[in-house]
View 1 (cartoon, rainbow, N blue to C red):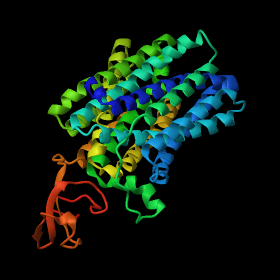
View 2 (view 1 turned 90 degrees about the vertical axis):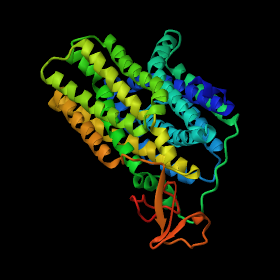
View 3 (view 1 turned 120 degrees about the vertical axis):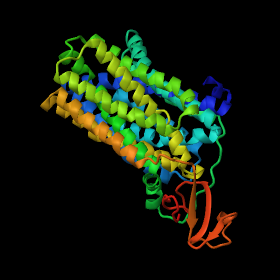
View 4 (view 1 turned 180 degrees about the horizontal axis):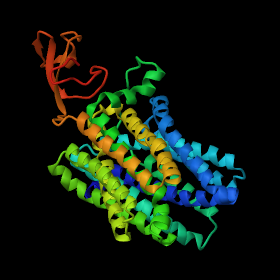
Length: 449
């Protein structure tokens, strides 16, 4: 897996990702302490609103930023977004009002919503071999999981030496280092997009591409299953440990660690598995596993039969299944978009997948508080199972990259029709099929493009 780090460009980009993630982890801890300083017992409400600001930025800003920045180089965009994030992190220790936190978090997460899809779309252009790209996706997943495990521990050590405000300084340094690393490499240039559409069409291009591609519609449903499971873990782990198991707060990191270790295990195993299995054969069973895991949790809670060992095992299984869906996501998006459309496709993927959390986070917390934990687990299990079943139905079993299709409206001497065969319906040929200017809808087995 580490062999891909021999590529200098990818090595610098991966280092930028790791350093920025570490800085973000420090900021997460510092922000919770800042919220307590500003709001005391109301800190939870402050953090909840900040989380809502984050999700709204992820949902709306990414595609808009991608459309507005299509005349910028990707390197310039990413460096500018890192500089913006560094400036926000530097300003956070000086806020004195809760509303200032919301504004700065919205700016910070808006910059992340522009940076992350651009970064994700760049990697397959740097690592053009599918095997190398798969390894890079696993490394990326490892980076996210290790950050969630290690950043709180690093923050705890630093807090014994300095005040929490200095954690924001670490975040600033991380984003600036990321900007330097991104600026140090030369990225592949993309062909310019045709200037035949308006700004609204450019903003929605990624969504239209995403929703017109069967495998990506299925992927969106896989992310709904992930959102249902993740909401239960993130929102209710502490309540389950205190009220369901009667254990102390010191066990919360252990439970979250079991979940993280499960995801790390999936990331380590997937490069080998994906040599023998298709993405569909990995991701659909993982979605059904999430539904089954939440169902098992609901049953154990209803029967008052949830034990500590079983709880940890269940969280590890949910982590494995989540990692098995999230890690190959980039492969599906890359295979479903032309190179110059990938930034828009990744922006749509980033936006749509995070949009589910605007539903599952409130459902998880509200139902648990109002109707009981077993009811919340049952509702989220139903969501996850329904997502898996629907995803299974709409993801073609024979999901070939090359698809035969017919062009009925192109001029016979159009360059795209080279080697196409004339039929009564038009010109038929077969090639790696993606939604673009020449292919506006996904063909059936023998359909017009």
